[in-house]
Every structure is written in C-alpha cells, then in structure tokens.
Length: 202
Length: 230
Image 1 (cartoon, rainbow over the protein chains, first blue to last red):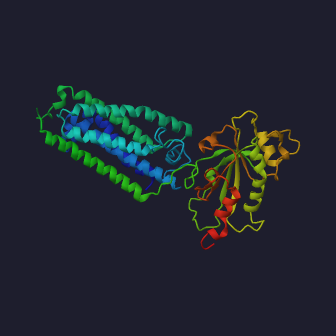
Image 2: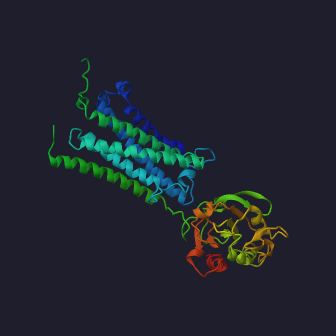
Image 3: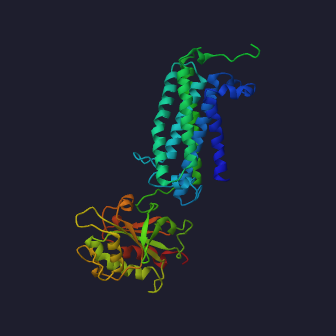
C-alpha cells in the first residue's frame, strides 16, 4: 500500500478526534447523536475524541518505530526526493533517537500514547472516581511536556530540510490530546461534568 | 455514585492490561517483520552517514557514502565492492607515514590489475583538521597530499606534501576540515580505518583491533575463499 495512503488510516481518526475535542464539536456531531449517544454531552465528545486521538497516536508511533527498524535494515518505506520523505528523517542516525537515552522517537511516542490511552480509558470508564482529577492532570502534563519535544523534532526536520509526515501526524495527535485533556481537566471541576444528555423535544 | 475499592482497582487494572496488550502486539509486529541493525561505528553496526565535498582528482564534488551501498548484497557474493574508509589529517605524522600503505593497498585491492581475485575494495579518505597547534589544514593541502603536487608550497606534518611516502593516491578525499564526519563517527584519533561490507555494515574497525593493519583486515575478509561458492 502506498505509504501516504496508509498514513490516512492515522490522519483521519486523528482529525475526527481533534474536531470532537474542540469547543464547537456539538454543532458537528448533532446528526450523529442518534447513532452514538455518548456524543450528546460535552464530556462524551471529549472522551470519544481522546480515544480516537490516543489510539491513532499510538498506532502511528508503532508504525514510525517499524519504519525506523526497516530503514536500519537498509530498506526503503517512504523515501522521496520531495520535501516529504519520512525515511530521510526517521533513518537519520543523528536525529532519530532522543539525545539523553538514545531511545528511538517512535518507541517514546508509543509509550507516551499508551499512557495517554490508559488515562483516557480509565477516566472515561469511571468519570466520578477520586483519582480521575489526578489522571486528567497527568494527561495534561504529559502532553504539555510533549510540546518542547515536538519543537525539537521540528528543528531536526528544518535542519535535514525534510518533513516526516508520519511524525507530524503523531505531533498533531499530541497537540489534540493536550486540548482534550486540558478541557476535560477544566470541565471535571464544574457541574457540566455530570450533565445529562438533552432529551428530544425537551 | 462511588464504587468500591475493589471495583476501582478492577477498572484500572483491566485498562492497564488492555493497553499493555496493545503495546505487546505492536512490539511483536515490529519484531516479527523487521530485523533492525543499530547505526554506529562498532563492528556489526550500520555505518553512519558521511557526506561532504570530495576531491577525486578532477575537482570538488558532492560525496554521499550511502550511494555506495548495495542493500541486497549477499555475504556469499564476491562481486560486491567493499570499502576501506580512512579518517586522517594531512598534518598527522603517522597519517603521512601510512600514506604509502594506503597507496599499496589501493593499488593491490581496488582493481584486478595486480591479480587480486578477492572482493574489490573502494578506498576513501576523510581528511580532517585536528584541533592541535600546527595542524592547520586546507583544501589545497588535501589536494597536495593526495596528488603529491610538485612545488605546491603546502606543508604536511612539517614537510613538503609532495615528499610524503608512497605514490599519488587515485581514491577520493573528503573535506572534513570542520570535523563533522569525524565527530559523527566518534573517531578518537587519526589515522582510523574502517573496512565496510558492500551493504554498509562495518566489518572491521582499527580501533577494535590494535596492532592490526588495514591490509590484514582486507586479506581476512575479502579473500576469495571467504565467499561460499565463489
């Protein structure tokens, strides 16, 4: 399968998830509430969006780690002469691991999104438990810490003069997850947290 | 409505199991479909990038080490071309001394002219400028060192570059005066040598075999009898 077409498997759920965690998501999801009742509340939309985002972020990170391993064998996956060439970024031995521990960025992304997915699954399953607030704060903190890492990785792409479209998808997923966790964290302190879905005709 | 501690633990534990299962599935997919090779300068690792301007006798042109590799090379294939990479400094006395060995090695192993029937070896030198007083170098000095240019006026380790031992070299010299490549390869001193397989994997590194010469490594790895069915 064409790498850019395969990338859509991650881009589409990330974008849909991002739209769900944005403040105007209610206007977008109106027609879908009948099929997906959880989208009727703001909390439901945020959790739904976060599930899509964290799962896509996890999957694209796994694929990035796979590409990194494939390129190290000497293979090609998404090499291109254009500016969009993830092989050139992920396969660059100077920049494809973190500068402290030497871990591949794809592996770090995989673990981070797995943690965010865990926070999302647990808090959405038991939204009124005492630990939920802490989990949402930790989710926000982890995604905030991702921002300087994203900026570092963008600086690498600038130096290499290539853009890794798989990495960019993971970066967008982190930013979308930040929006989702932050809004959930704020909302958990308000009565809106336990808002009931509006009944039809009410 | 609050739930009991037992149920709380169950939600968190079951979610952890679900997420860890996903992580393991991801790792299993990667492990079963790839065979990653670390990039580095130890034997068995994939040679890092090495880029820059090279002088091959006709002027300074782009060099990219990656373009030399045949990733489909099979270890029984004697026709694959190996590479001997030297990190050197034109002002390093030992590099000047060993220039004659590099001349002899390239003449013996880079073509069939001298009845060499093993795998052919490309020779490349990466010329740096060590941060030591008296080691000021330049592209003109690299050219004078490689070509043994008469009356160049360039000094290599205190003597005229054309007086260095050995014949003029026919292999390319890369400009690494800024030490970029040397740093990326973690080269501790000059001269340092790497014998690299046709697929870009480092087979021999002089730093891991003190006392061994590049010729010993070439004879050990590239002799015809080393290749099954050759």
